Length: 253
Image (tube, rainbow, N blue to C red; front, side, top):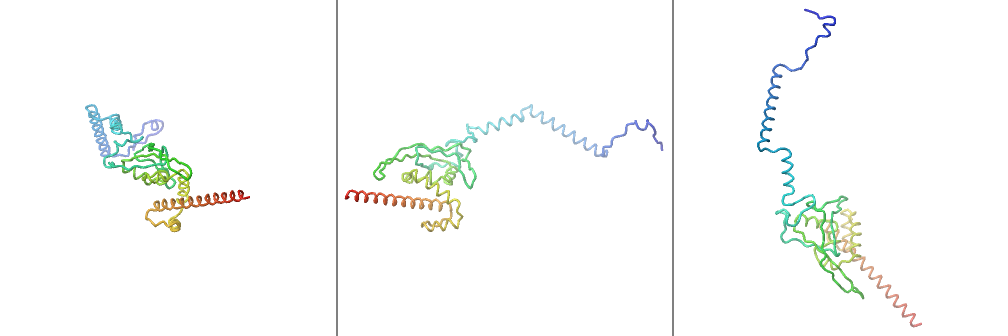
């Protein structure tokens, strides 16, 4: 066996170790050759009518905005998907000259409007005049009609439904700012009640149990507001009666 020694042995290049057998090297070369063929075929397809990445991006953009529908900013009534369209629609009323909804707070989280709509706007309809004691009061109201089943469901589930807007115009006629403020305050308090406490308080006001806690909470809130308003009316009447009696006494003196 020859032994290399000295500088000659150190300077002689050593063979590189690939760790692959001849069969493995041939297999690797074959695979690489196939990949080259596939890439060449793809390139030929693209130059003869195939789609490049830029083409795909353009098509996706066109589909996303097809028919001028931009789902990021919302859609119009005519653009509501066919299976979501409610031909009759549902009219919602608010006791304001105008009202806007942009989102909702549910269980501590912001819930956006369906289909990415930026807002729902209630448009002014008319102003009602009615007698309130010795004075004439006015009650404006606005409306919004939805033809989307998904949107209708969203509005009915809103924390403001039954307080700031209704489906029944009679409810709007009987609402005023003071009542709305009381409803909002009491609903906020009741939202912190668990089911047991809610049922207990509902019984105190003669509210029947329902499977939907929100319906029961809303009915209870209205009952509590009416009770508060009645107490205020009684106190006001008592003060007026007392003042009247005092004036009579002063007159007699």
